[in-house]
Amino acid sequence: MKPSEQTILENQELQQINEEEEGFQEGGYGWVIVAVSFLCNFVIDGIAYSFGVLLPELQKDFNAGNGSIALVGSVLAGTYLLTGPLSAAACNRFGTRTTCCTGAAISGLAFLSSRFCTTLPPLVISYGVFGGFGLGLMYVPAVVSVGQYFNKHLSLATGICVCGSGVGTFAFAPLQSVLVQAYGWRGCNMIVACFCFACIALGLLMIPNEKGRATVQEENKSFNWKILTNPRFLLYCLGNIPTVMATYAVFTYLPALAISEGLNADKASYLIACIGMVNTIGRVLSGFLADLPQISPLILTMIAMLLAGAMPVIFLFCGTYTQFLMISAGFGLFLSAVPTATSAVVVTLIGNQNLNSGFGILTFVRGIAALIGPPMAGFIADHTGNHEYTFIASSGQIASSGVIVGIVFLFHKYIKDVRVLHIQVYKVHQRCT
Image (cartoon, rainbow, N blue to C red; front, side, top):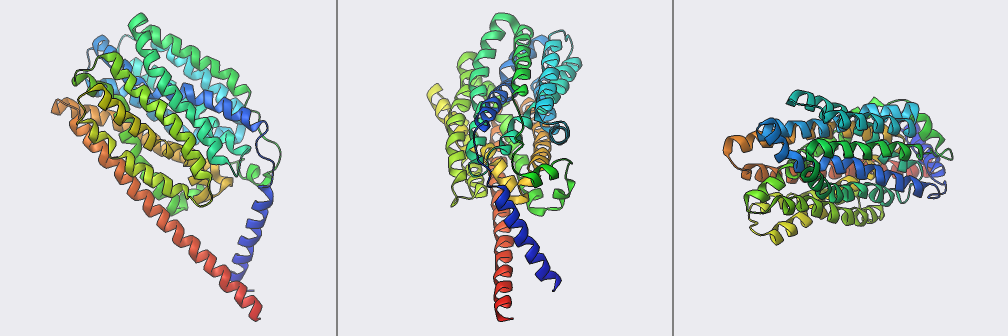
């Protein structure tokens, strides 16, 4: 038998094995996992995306500019995403429960200790580095654990669990605004630490699924770096960088932009809450759409990025609270499909057996972008005296990501079509011989 024919037979056998392994019953305790993951994401992104609310108070307390203070929030967001590969490896080695509980304890202690900081460097280390590291250990288990219980409805289940991010953003922005006014940013961080400690109990509920997917579990015992040789996955990771840079920049500086247009601090914080609320609805909807067999998660992601890319620049033309709310809602809605479809995209490009490793690497790449985005935007604002260029650049970045994901889709479709053609040719050859 020719080597090419042997490869085709091996692919057919592997496909049959995967179909058999995917026959396990979905749901059950998996819905508890969805609820637990929802609450963990509620805390994680509620903290990360609401840093802009603390920005004015921190500037006054430390007498620092936009770029310097934004570094604190970007280090937190960047570190928690950069921790992705380590968190994924920990999930593979120690399980999601141990990893999540450890992260919750570390982040809680980090935010608790940040209240004692009197200069900026210790705040960057405690709040940014250790706080972000703890959240990062929580984040990957709060997403990939759902994949142990769902296959056909993976995107919907993932969409529901990552809705915690939108609800957290909706709840934490006004909550932290009230807490800062009542207790200052130091007292606010003490209460935030309590939310992290509560996630230890949530992590204990992440009981792994022992049924089915023996091959997947075997593959996930070690961290698979071979996926870095997949050009489609690498290109998809590259396409995530501009979007994440822009997203964190918008979340960080939208309140400041709104205040510069005459809105008070409370209304400005509710813009972040509006994005989170509509983003929550959008994640359930996009999760449902991504699970439809006729809709590619790559196409859904591409369209979402292109539409979301138009929103930041439109903020510059807003003059009233209503206008800011409407564009915030649009931004939250269109952006919702990006995190919701992530697991489905990773599975599409590199297979379910590589979901943990792939998600960890992708999270690391997003962390680099989150680390760079807000400080860069802040320094631009400091040198130009306004935030206009920040929001113009954000629109261009998100739209460029949509173009890159579109290229990934075409590349993936071409390879898939070639494989199908090879199988058809092989079947014809078998019948003729």
